[in-house]
Length: 386
Image (tube, rainbow, N blue to C red; front, side, top):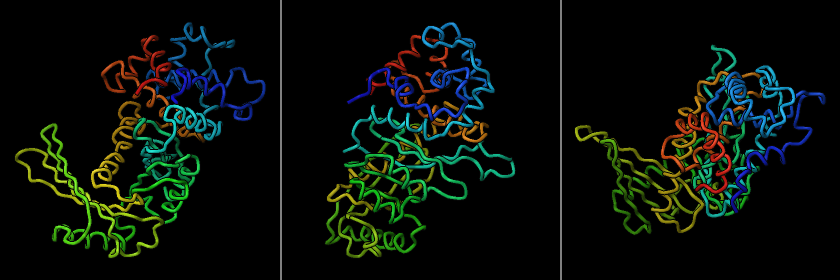
């Protein structure tokens, strides 16, 4: 069931607990008021604390119609201190429950897991490796981030992905992950969560990758003689570019090295992409290889899942950089960058789900910042948009 139309503001009121507020008991501004102003500011074009405060000052009279604001508009330092101190788990809980309401059950849906580095969030110019790296779970069908998990310092996505999986009810879903997350323990965790997986295979598993490449390439040369398989081909053209995708899938795995290490491994996939940038350019051909727990899945379905995986890059990561300047954000004190990242993902999801205007998210932000009617429509329509 879809969420109620006022759900994100209701979630702030319902989900935040007194112990989520890191401030003293005599704080002048309500936590919910501060976060409501911040969400509205981010929706309306603000990318940092000064922007949020300027937005609130400009909209003071309107904000007072639904927020008490007994002490006026909070200062920049108030927002900075709050976002630096509040535990990210509190806002991530709001994000998870809000997106879960909108998405409903994940059974039969595709969940992609991928990481993104906030490149401007490093502590010092000489230490870019200290930049915040977030791993997100994205539902392809609902175009929403389901939850996110920060990668611990001196760690990588392999440690964050299992924690992310534990936060979601994945029963009946298909989880797709790029090669970094192709680990036997992660595959096992997905299966035990009641889901299936499609995992990219690259040279971080050299024996498996070599076996896939040698045997699948040979099967194609021999036209899969005596090997049960399925095949699908599609072509897409646009902006003078033509891309043809050929997908082969087989459940005959007797030849595959180390197949017993992967829980419920049932099929392997090869996707060949031939891309021509223009009529005069030479085509480029690439091949990618995957393993999956899906049984008897066609090449068409598996190819669709593999292509769908990149919606997290094309629709979320890219959109956050273009429409929200996420890569340029220099907020970095304590939890500030991670907490603002949650608000950006909420705002991005709300704006993407609004279909009333046929413009990009960046233009929708501008419209929301100067048009109360449209801003309320975005907020109140999030539960019904498709």
